[in-house]
Structure formats: C-alpha cells, structure tokens
Length: 609
Image (cartoon, rainbow, N blue to C red; front, side, top):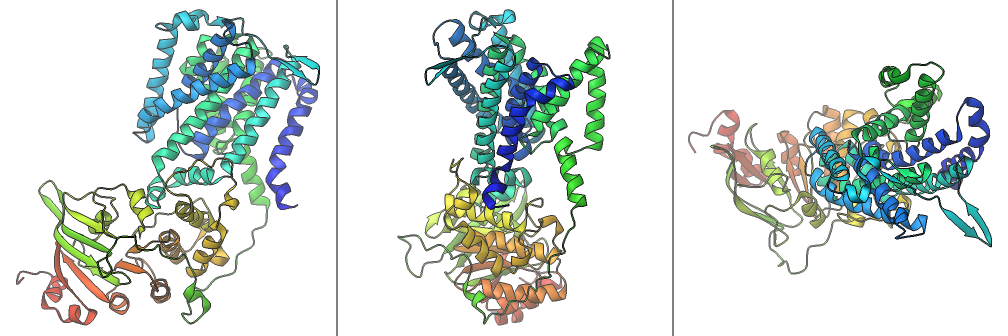
C-alpha cells in the first residue's frame, strides 16, 4: 500500500460506510431518525475527542457550546433574519467559537479536576441564561419550534432536505467533511503538539511551545464542532430544545466517547451507535421504561472495566497482540568522535545582534531564592562565556537543581537578575526562554512515554521551526521545512537511529537518558543545561554517555550538573561549586581538586570557611 493510500484509507472507509449505512442498518433495527442522530452525535464527539482524547482536557461543559450554536442558528432561521440554513449554521458555529474563547480563557487557568469543575459550572450558567434572562430569544422552556430544513440548488436541480434518509444524507455529508478536517488537524504539527500536551505538558512548555495557547486552540476547535452539531440538532428535529444546554447532554457525550474509544476520532460515532441502540432496545423490546438508564449505566461500567480504551481501542489492542513483533537490532551508544557524526546535529542558534564580543553568554547577579525563611540559593554571581563547558557541583542539598530551574525560568528568583545573550530574562516565561536558545535536560526523565522516539524529537524540533504558537492546522507534519533532517541528525547524534520508531516506554534506561539529552539538543540551543545526565546509569553507560557529551559539546556552550566527579573533571573546562545554596569556589578541575574548602564540603562541612 502506497503512503498516500495509507494516509487516506480512513476517509475512504468512512465514505463507504456512510453510503452503505442506509442499506445495512435498517435490517439491524435502526430507524432513519436514529441513524441521523448517531451521525450528529458522532460529529459533536469529534471535537470533544480532539479536546479530551488527543489533548487530555476533560470538559463536562460542551453542552454550553452545543446549545449556543444551535440556538443562534435556530433564532436566525425562525425569525427570518437569514434564509440560508448553511449560513445560519456557520454563524451559529462562530457564536459557539466566541463562547469557547471566553470560557477557555477562564477555565484554562486551572488544570485537572479544577478545569473540569469550572466547565461544569459555566455550562450551568449557560443553561440558566437560556431559561431566564434570554428566554425571549431562546423560548425558555419551550425552545424554538419551526427550524427549517435546508434547500440546495445544484446545476438547475433542487434538493429539498426532508425527514428520513434525505436528512441522514445531509448530516452524513456534514460528518464526512468534519472527519476529514479533524484528521487533517491531528496529522498536522498542531495535532502532534496536542498529543504531546496530553502526555507531558510541562516538557512541552520547556521545549518552547505555548501550552496555554494550544490548549485554548483545542478548546475552541471542540466548541466549533459542538456549535455546528447543535445547529444540526435543530434542523433534524425542526425544533431547538432547551435540553441542549443541560448537563445530561455533556455527560452523554463523555460516555459515548469513552464507550467508543477516546483518541480515535471515530470512537464517539461508535459510542453513539451503542448508546442510542441500547436506549431504544431497552425501552422498547425489553420494556424497561425509565429504568433503561440504570441498565445502560451498568453496561457502561462493564465496558469501562473490560475495555479501558473503548470498543475501537479494544479491537486495536487485539490486533496488536496477534501481530508478530520484530525485536529491533541493538544499537551501541559508543560514539566515535573521529567519524562524520562528530559534525552533525542541530546547529546552535547564533548570538543575538547587539551582544558585545567577549561578554558572557549567561550572567547571574545576586541570584537568590527563598522559601519562607529558608534559602535555597543566596547571592549567586555566576558567568559563563560562549563556547565554554562549565560544570556545577556540590553536595546533595547544595541548591544546584533550584539554581538550574531559575536559569531556565521554571522557578522565579526572589531577588537578583539573570542576563542571557545580553538580555534580562528574569521572570520570563519558560517557553520564551527556550525560544531565545536556553534549554535544559532534566535530572528525572521528562519524556512523552506513549510516543515513539522520533515523535519525541519532532516535538522539540517543531518549536524551533514554528515558534511558540502557530495555527497551521491543515498543513501535514511531514511538510514542515527542515523537520525530517533535523530530527534525523539528532537521532544520529544521540545514537537512537535504530530505535526511532520504538515507543519510549520500551526503551532501556540508558536510552531514555540519551533521549532526554536529545530533546534538549533538538531545539538548537545557544546554551544547553544538563541536569545530572549520568544519573542512574551503569558504569558502561556512563562511559558511553561521557563520549556522547564530549561530541555534543563541540561548537556549543554547556553547563552540566553532575555528581560523578571523575566524569565532571574529565568533561568540564571550569567548575563552579555550590554549598548550602551559596557560591563556594570556582576554577579549573585541577584547582577545584586542590581546594581545601571544596574538600571539607564533600567531607561533611565548611566551618572553616
């Protein structure tokens, strides 16, 4: 199968499925109205799946945008303000997007359960507004009756959308367009960053992406799908009901997505089919009446327990278990510094114009971090020149990690100033600092564990190629200029080429440490900070990684924190020693080895100092 065929087979399969559905589903007991509702809910769920399944943001407030889009379109049509149904749907979608921006700006100030609870509260506010202050426009408890169906004139032929399969055809076309757009988004750079945010938003931020703006983008995209689906609900029923705004609508959407499989785009469609079929079956042939919700709830619990990734995820897992796995060849991490690999890799960014030659690339002045009455760092004055490989050492608790976090602006200092490339970066956002060319690796691996090695490196390179934020939603990832070349160079430099398509969770620990360094390196930093790159490695892995670091340091400025004194004295040109959060000594490795204060610090105290 060609690359083009592999890329577009889901769209082709979707089109075929939508075409044959009217010929197959009636024999299974599906009425035309039920099939139309399934497709409408599937379209609603596409946006929610981008938000929840791909970006990791669980919202219980999608009914707010579903109702907003539906009522805006219905009001325009029922009051004869606009005669075009499609134009009304577009305006309703825009209205839902505006509401999404306003709600997102508020809700995205928090994460996790707090974000979810804010969306619940805001949805309740929308429901109250629809029923009381805006009831003159929405009809209050009565809703808006008389929503017309669309009429299309094509090449002299008129298509009047009516009930039954004619309505299904219209909604199916809308769903197909929606799934094509959604898949384009997921396969774009923006989609790759959405998935990375779901896995590890902290690292995405540290690599130079604006996590908040991308989360807001996902939220607005989900609002757009919700608003358009809400408009379709009014057209489908000929009436816009007030229950579009209720929490039950949001809850049903969440449950359908989980049943079908989050993070698949098609999961909400299959979940809606299961939900609506069982609802009709339990109420009708089984005769449970109002108790259908109890039975359906039990079925939902069982599905979640035994199919944690939903119906589609369960099928995918079954196929994956039956597929033979070839063990990738082992790749040595030993780097021959005389080979051509010594010159490849992402090029460091150039010094900013206006920076004086001979001036330090990084300088701290009286850098202090205090937590209450406890000083983590106090009055540190520190300079690093361009091209230097500086080591930072000190006993446990000396404040080294806090010092590094202040340099990359993960932690803001209580006092003092940080100058980078002649620019004051004190208190700046982490992603902006990375965009300026200052990047770090972490002492404890901060990787995207469910993604492959290649995908991890791509996230880092995208920040270099695209900046903090860009909404190129429909441009495929592979068309980003220079992306593939820079990713390949980074893989070669950290000796992970043969492991490029292996999930990070399957890597050995030493390979994960090299990938951790590779993520920092892939952003083409002017200054690279490495926080204990040898931590937890075996003696053999330490030797191999030291060789790799020596290769990486060519043409770059680096600061390394490390407890392995032999490795540090072998790598660093100059060494700075911290003790109890303060500057203790600085000099060449030989000078540090002879320093009495340093010896006392590592032997248990510096009282003589």
